[in-house]
Image 1: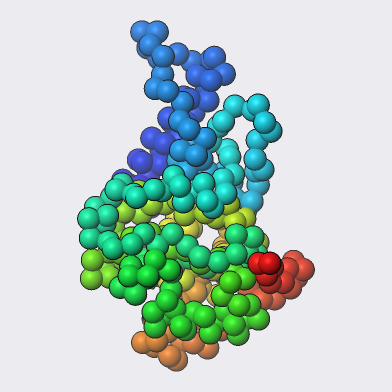
Image 2: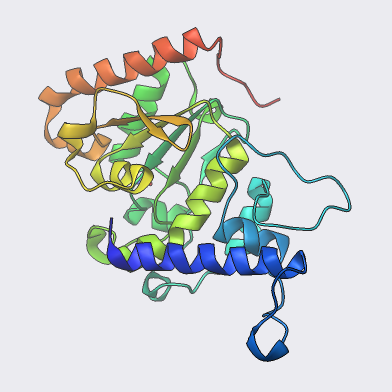
Length: 259
Ligand code: URA
């Protein structure tokens, strides 16, 4: 893992722990000063989201804490007109995510490209057309699944995401996964797989088997943009997706169509 991302995560963990202690009356700041005011429920959940699919909303009256499951609308509201990293200066549109908020299956890509930056929708360019075909071949429609990216803003020239950008944006992807609570995740390409799994490995070393992400199973596979350049690898990607279909069937999960 990237050391800066690790430090940011540790700092967020520490802050959340101190605030939990403060709320429970077990800690006060040195010199008797009160700790920084507790974060809003939304801010806390984005900084330190609940384990995926594990935590329901707190009962009314329970103190807001970091182990909170927000709705997608709440996560989007917290993101706001984000200026947390340098990409805000060059983006046209924030690309938050799209699809069913109760999707059993979620796809995570890398970052918006030019078409997505223009329209605000993930995966609408050439790679998106191929992703739609892959989703349909699995028996789903695009609207049955949820599609998001590691980064919500386009990196200039479609360069790879940088560690500080992933660190700024990562909490929002975590919160989206917690909100949707899919049964399975598909990571499209190396940056998505490495971010979701906290590793630094080529996609060819990760794809083809399920990995665990805090209790949620993740299938890494090739990014559709790579498949457009290397169509011979479509066979491998399809074999990965067939494993996902078999696992969904084993879980008794079909498409949940939005009414
Ligand atoms: N590539 C991605 O990784 N995400 C998009 O939304 C579009 C292209």
